[in-house]
Image (cartoon, rainbow, N blue to C red; front, side, top):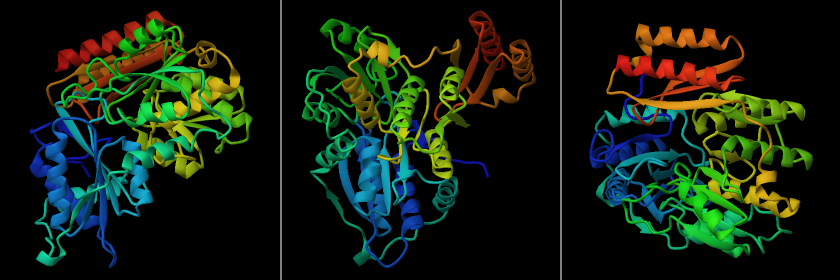
Length: 445
């Protein structure tokens, strides 16, 4: 069944344009509330958000929707996505909602939903909610309308939870860390957690205005972090995205380290200590072949899924894995979290930095990645991948790689983009293949 509202990571779009309007948000609240009102107990939903200006509007609309169908609402304000997942579980809530468009610009927003177990909703639940959105809402009787309250200690609860993932016998004393919070949801909690563990913290992206989230800061634009690490002679730099479920690291030389290297580092570290489960790592089709070879050399496997951290989590739960993620920096460590958590993943990296005594540039280089190139092509509408000229270009690219590399072409689930990725032994060939396919997509659009 085709989806009308939900993409690969909840509902997302430009604010005040369908589907990201206050009216739709209210209908989501009413429909999700109806789906998760089960049993005779007083029902509760936790709502968090990032720092976008439109967060106030979307939050209020969701409150109206949920309370109108009889659910109580707990508001936690600007908080990381993984914090909302954690609080949903710890507060015994029936549902969790994060209002965020993650790494997108401020003018976009989104709605992510979590079940009572803290995991993102299944396809079945999302489709059911979409169906309910098309029906008249079942409004509560006047005496049964829900109440809303704000929880003031939510930040402290999350900081404590994140710190509990860090080995008790270690501290961060003596480490100079630059943390870039993307002017987003973690702008208070992430620097505080690092400081409480003993680090010297230099914070970037911690002055949100409502319109500067992810603007020349954060995991998708680490240039400022690289410069600050070199300028301050820091030991390491950490970049989160707008809702802090993504992590990118910069070593002391200013080199950017992606999620593939971080997953390899954590998985091998845990494997040596008998902590790794599932016999390997779960990652998406976008992860570098170098990661797969690195794990194989240590007798571990790489289980690939389609793009989207929710699919990684599903495979982890099915196969009993406790390390998984995406090259983009979504890293799920299921011993500690139910979704990607940039701060928790960063603490695992920092623990190894402390224990090893090695510089970050040495520690974080776990394998030599194969040449890989990813380009995004924006399109106005339609289905570019179904056009014959584009399909022909893709087939030609696969033939030219001739089994020495991989080609992954997909439509973004969150933006009007076609993502074209190729990797192989020959960097020049990889670049040529990507260029030709991108050219075909542009011509088709």
